[in-house]
Length: 229
Image (cartoon, rainbow, N blue to C red; front, top):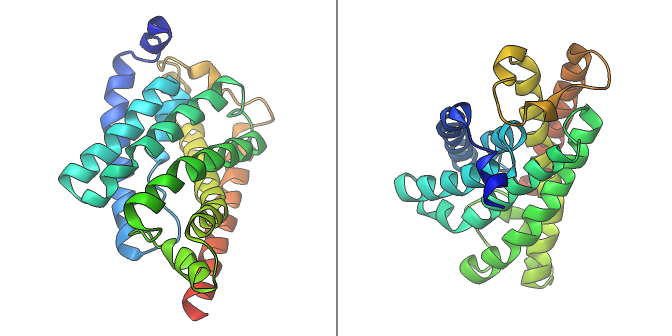
């Protein structure tokens, strides 16, 4: 086990982790301030998980929320177990070959979303009473007002919001990796996990960007309906 963990880390891993943490915190804080019904605070985590391995991804996720919570927003701190599992699961999915074609990346995002929804529910319920600082709490509050129980409302919100968020996150990470020079990617411990195997990389990139645009439009539509309804 220790050897498997050590295999995730080389010099490039340690250089990428702080960059990834900065990406997570910067984008995540903007999303919180704008009260968007997504999170987008795991793009850096997925990058590390896919390029370096599940343990490196898990460490990146956990450190992101710990540093974010201590230095910027205390509300981010309790979510570090969720960020840990996001990184771990993204890395596992990459190990299983689910980061080589755009449609497999969609599957990765969906699996990571289910993991995040399950792990985050107890935190949202027992620490925050179901209503957190995230914009997605608009949905939870609405469901609770209609008579839905707290746990069910939080789970329902997670299963609605998380797939949009995590598929978008995975696709953005995929697009970034496709745009990196092969020489750079080749220096990471798990570079073989991101070889594109379903056509030209440019085609994969365009498809990934298209999926992201559609998901963003869907999130905007969802937010408009919530605020308008």
